[in-house]
Image (tube, rainbow, N blue to C red; front, side, top):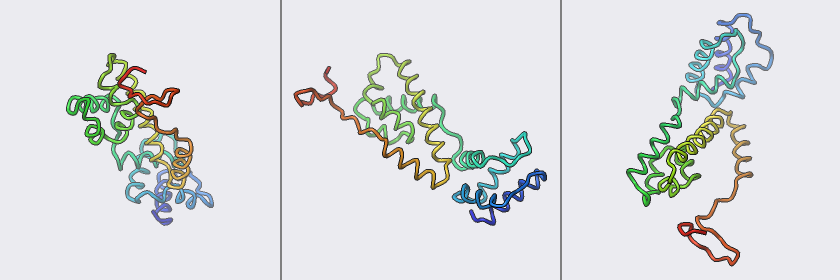
Length: 189
């Protein structure tokens, strides 16, 4: 989006709320925060936020970005829907079809399945507990993904760098004992 298009958005907002005072630097600051958005999507998002606002004030840039994200990508999969997808994948692919099942799941759902473990989901003795754990983890993952997607590009880059520097090493699919022998996790450690 161009600086002129951001000016149009602010002109629309001040037409709706004539008492709003646009100060020097506002257009530039908004451009910095919204420049990666398509103008038509941003204009629709501004209209949505203004229509839903109960206070005649300059909308928060974050609300506009969230509305734009919702308009572009639709609403997210709920935790119960995600769990239903996992159960369907388990029925369709079974214990040995992990790779195929993961490929057909949406990214956030697949990530949570990887965290929990396909084997653990398939062989859980307490499906209600597994469902609750999955749903709680999925809600956290989905919230994180949407928050990051709603950030301006420069901030996304910083957050990604922080995540990469704080990432834990991948857990091996085996248990290492003091003798450095490796026993597959299918056996009791």
